[in-house]
Each structure stands twice: as C-alpha cells, then as structure tokens.
Image (cartoon, rainbow, N blue to C red; front, side, top):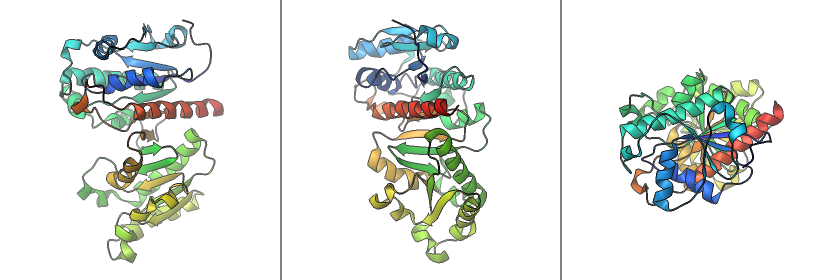
Length: 341
C-alpha cells in the first residue's frame, strides 16, 4: 500500500471501552462507510480489534503505525491503521460489564488521542465511548471526555454542543442535577456560552454571522415573571449584552415551541439552559445520527452521542451511524481549519 501523499485531514479515533461497543462501531464504520476521504488512525489495541473481527467473522487488514510522527509515512489505504496504546490482555474483556482493566485502556486511548491533537500530530479527535464507572475504578477521576479535554487543553470555559445535520443545540449547563440548574443560570454563564457558540461556529463551521436562539429556563418564558425570574434577571441581560457585542442572538424563547419544525431551519444554533431541555428534542429527531461536539477548546473533538451500550455488546447490533457522523463532522471541521490557516 502507498503512504498518504495528500494533505487530507488525519482523524484520530480513540478505541473506547473494549468491553463496550466502541470497537464494534469502529469496525462497522470501516466495513460499511469508509471512503477514500477517510484518513482514520485508531488509538487502541490491535489484539482487541482482532478479537472482535474474529467474533464477527470479518476480515479487515490491520496496519500498525509505529509512532505518531510516522502517520503520513506509514498509513495504508483500505486498512485499519492502529497506533498501539499501552498494554491490554484480551482475556480481561468482559462483554457488557464494568471492568477496571477495560476502563484503564479506554482512558489511555482517549488521552493519547487528545495529546496527539494537542501536539499537532493529527487534525481532529473522535472519541468512542468509555464507561465513567470503569475509568474511575481504574483510578482516573473524571466525569467524562469533556472534562479531560478541558484539563489537557487548559480550557476554563467550554460548551457541549450536539448536532445532527444543521440542527445544533448547545447547553449552558450539562451533567448536573435538575435542582442545581437554577443556581447555575447566571448572566455571566449564559453570556460566555453565547460567545463561545458564536466564535466556534465561525471558526470551525464557516458560518460568517451565526444566528443563535436562546431558550428560557421556565415554562412559557416565565409569563412575565409569574413562573420564575431567571429570564428577566439573568438570561435576557446576557442576550442584550451579546447583542451589544455584535452577536446575532435572539430570545429568550419558551422551550416548548423553540424546536418546532417551523423554527428548526431558522437558526444556526439553539442554546438550552440544561441537558434534557436541549437534548430531548434533538435525540427524539436524530437519535441515530447526532454528534457530540466540544466547543471552546483549541482542538477539534467530536464523538458519537451514545455510551458503551453494555446491553448489546458482542451481538453485532450496535448502530455505527453516530460514529460515522462524528468522523464526517470532524473531517469537515478539519477541512475548514486547513482552508483558513
């Protein structure tokens, strides 16, 4: 096979939890979706992929790349290109179970992929799912990939955005309990979210002047303060300040009508106040193809919008389409970055 001779983006894909569906959806992408546009390098373990290829009776040639510095030189078209991460015994795979050994290698795979992007060895990161309990059992105290990315890139303010096609939803708060949300809805936090969304839609998506909609926190936009005052006290002042900065932002809007069909093509991104407010409509419409994108960090990172799916591991039932969309989204963002740098 010939080495890469073009400047097509290199997308680093972390293996995910080997006891979960990460390796399976990567294999399925390679079998069903891989094209000549793809320059995918997997950070993981060859033995894990051979284990699943044998299980599913699939033949894909595997090429080991010796180091991150040799990616372009040693990449083989049409093969599964892998950079080995750490040491892992496939006997430690427990299909569909939380396992500290799987958690350890999953975390190390994600970490090495992130570091490769920070060091400019790859153009974007796509993270296959790991299990939060498993990585913590392995001694890594993180809630998820996003917190790891923020720490390694020295990023204080970041935003979780989910996207499917041109429907994008960003969140002011993410993985916190519902009772904590009102205290977290401050003018400063809402304004920072608006600014990050506006900046990164320009930076990574090529949208010259993003049009952004902001949801209310309370039902019916609080009905003039009858059902809470967060809109008047925090959200609307943040929107007004963003407008003064030249951002094309609108709201606040009642969340129960913000995502109806007539409005879904009107804005480039919708900002929701909390996790389920924004992700319920998106997942109801695009569960199999939505993508998680981290905004505010200096590298490109996307991921499939699902977890390790322990209940279906090893059954060849896992849907790979969200991973495929994550890879394609990362590719588009990396292409835009190349074009503008």
